Length: 345
Image (cartoon, rainbow, N blue to C red; front, side, top):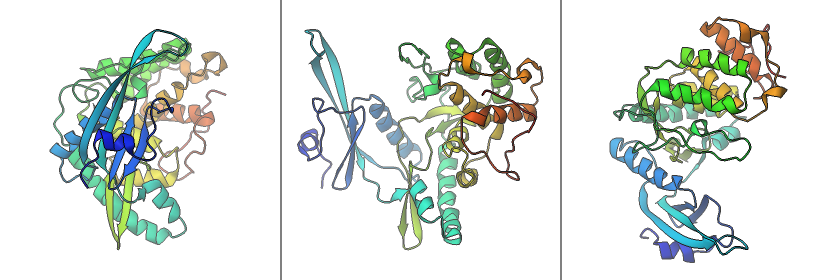
């Protein structure tokens, strides 16, 4: 079957129109094709990212982009005569057979030896993919392809009263990037927290790290696995968040996706080089991004200390995670909580 045309898509059973409540992203399978459509302009960026990776890393298994369509509608605000423009985007790619890695691991959780053997093969392929992707020559900026702003929520303006979120970037220096990561939080964080972050973030992240092409959303739902008689096909999907970022960014976000489940940490460590301290800093920034008013925070006495030693920073962060991320790693794992650390309550 040839890739579906725009007319084919709109006539297919299950298609949701704007008037029927089309969301910013919808999914529709048509034979061997997956159609991702909706009002989100990130679909155009996802198509661009997928074509870019296919061109530079042809052996990396990702869905092939077969077509991209865009429509424009003039619509009226409810109860008003004033009109506005609405765009709808359609990304047509291969439908990837298989199941998400997260589901795959859950289904084999009671067969540890079988799971371990399968994961050895799966993570080996993922490591090969990621090694190739990270060899793509950087283009001198931090952000989405074509020097567009980052799709990552950490690079969106914080407006707690309105919910408005303009994107920041691209960045042409890592110093500007780290300043943005910190200063965007000032609208709802305690001044002492901000002063500490001004020291913490540059100290750990640095300002001269290699830039690499990054998927930026590499979790167990975006890695597809298909068992072909003991040979595992592995594909990576959902590329709208991709772009050029410092070398630690991929690991920092991939590890966080497991919410400190040890089995996921062990998997990620097999296909990405670990960046533990950087991961904890990025995780903490995402925690602060939840827009909790600083008046509800207990500011620990360690905020007045001048130390920026990496071990102390990691300990402080683990203490702050007490009320935010659920179960922490058990004793004996790579990440340990320091008992004398206090944090927000």
